[in-house]
Image (cartoon, rainbow, N blue to C red; front, side, top):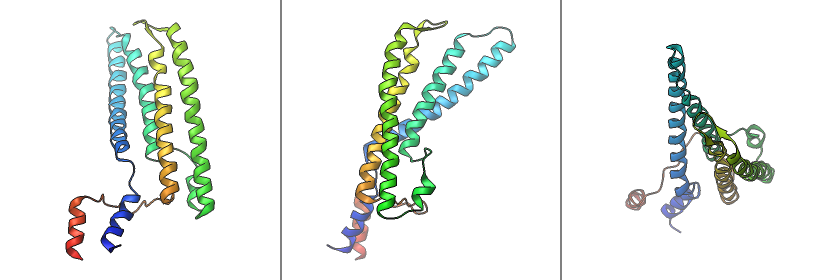
Length: 192
């Protein structure tokens, strides 16, 4: 196999699933919008209460933005591998011990995602019996974020397990690999 094709294949092995890259970007945008909306709604709540004309519905908006922001952020952190887990312990290892620790860690995260899906769905169904005031919307509208987040966390964790088993769990923190495009392949062909 020519050297340029070997290099391209090596670069492509370290790439994540492209469709999930777009989903991660959407989640990060949602997190930013939720944080902005949360900050604005808290500010407006303080201002309207200070002037003596509180907008009571702002508390509902604030809690909704907070809950959805937390669970969208948890899913995004899972994809980015920014969640809290035993990184220092796992990164100190190499070879089979590291593979085992990384897989076990992700299986624990997958079990937590399963709990979020199952118990979040149960709470979602029960939430139709309780209502938020003053809008009288079912509290299930808040609980819907829990199983959705669990499904995304499970998806991202499965992606990490598959990529880790194929390519290893060693992360290249200091050096980003470029995405192989037809231009980079053509450039490498001309150089050789």
